[in-house]
Image (cartoon, rainbow, N blue to C red; front, side):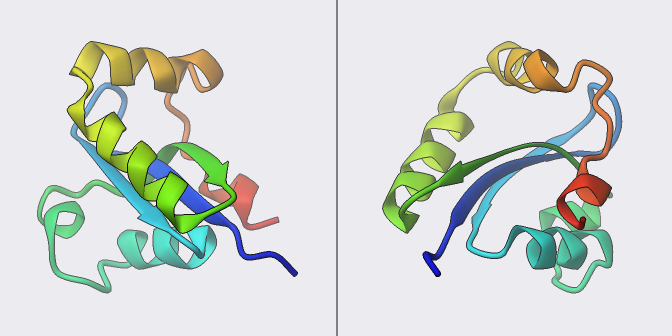
Length: 97
């Protein structure tokens, strides 16, 4: 089985605070954010809703994408989220199936 890598965006609420991350286990990592397992930005600012994610074939590609996303302005990030998730719904339940 090929390993998969993910770039994702979390939000505190609709049009709220954003966090961009990368992982090789999306379900586990989002669960960790939601349950405040690790100290940091998402725990401090209550950023727990998965509003966007994309799959990559290599860790290098996922990390490059994460770095690019972090450089983009907020309006661009908002448009990226709203292209597929206009109501900023939490997508976590969809990835757990």
